[in-house]
Amino acid sequence: MTNNQEKLIKIAVIGDVHGQWELEDEIALKHLGVDLVLFVGDFGNEAVEVVRAIAALDIPLAAVFGNHDAWYTATDWGRSKCPYDRTQEDRVQQQIDLLGEAHVGYSSLDFPELALTVVGTRPFSWGGPEWKYNDFYRERFGVNSFEESTDLMVQAVENARYENVIFLGHNGPTGLGDAPEDPVGRDWKPIGGDFGDPDFTNAIIQSRKLGKKISLVTFGHMHHRLRHTQERLRKCIDVDSEGTLYFNAARVPRIIETEGQKKRNFSIVSMKAGFVSQVALVWLGQNLQIVSEEFLYCQQKLVVESA
Image (tube, rainbow, N blue to C red; front, side, top):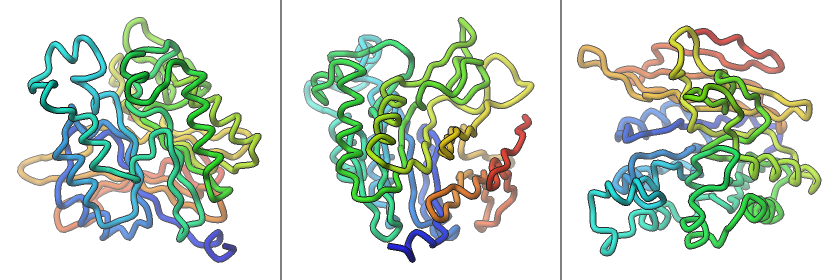
């Protein structure tokens, strides 16, 4: 246990995929030498084949689903636009089945080699202070409110084997600011407001009472590129008084092609002794070379972001 805690752990956090996943991504992750891969969801609009490819990764992984992963199932609008026969196919369940135990929504997954547990928050979250899509959550998970949602997360924490816990969500928790540029701030009209998940926040609070050390809280959903201004990017890092690092990994699009040359991004979180020591946004080009590396956080120093 002691040796594992002292080991430098390299974690790749994959922001919202939105259909951008290729065989080269697995090759790149192995080239980067990561110990664990975390996916924050939004693989595509119920993109079963994308999830199938990710589930086949030969690297330890954990994932949660985002709102786009129930795009044609959870809402009246989505059901009206559904391009397939929902009476014949349940693509939400197909995605859940494909990931198996790697899907940590409302559950936990222990990683003995790393001496840590990943706990997933509410899957398929749209975010915001109001409980929405009650039929979807009741039928799929037996959940009817934020309070019941928090209870399921806390149960997952209670089942965690390790003291060191990483929370993995699609949308982030409330409490990280209400400006549109904040990690989970609303950047569409009406501008401003904390659009975090209150059940997520309460789960963090209760987990600490259970004696768990929360080293990292990572999520996506709110893209770094803001809708109301091109002058700057969304703030993606915050650190609280307990030493927990909050990281929004949604740098979208994650694959960019220019003049036939592709580059793809991965967020690399380095951890040691239960603390995050560094967060870097890495872009890999052709032949797996690193074409740029932006350090978002180094030890106790927060890097000032710019557009």
